[in-house]
Image 1: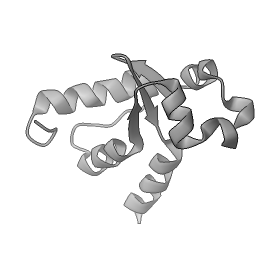
Image 2: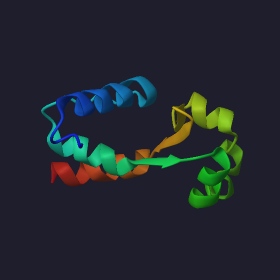
Image 3: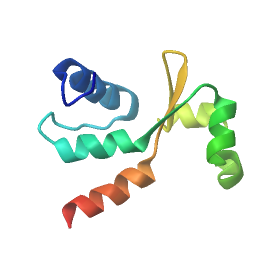
Image 4: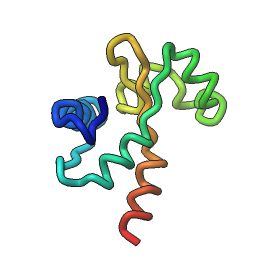
Length: 98
């Protein structure tokens, strides 16, 4: 079941983005919804997040998991670590405007 087929899944995803990452997307903004889906990565543990993204090496002064949660970069959702790439989001928005 995916968002295109199920309004509840789509609604839940949009509410999650708003609550956890302060990202407001309207239900009719299909291109932005598709972009947001591309910006989310889900990891099992913080260690896996660090290993796969190299965040702690690229951003050593901002690498504590507390910092990542407080700044809504990563969130713990149902036992997983959700990461929302703001860089990918901003770059994607620029492409949508062109």
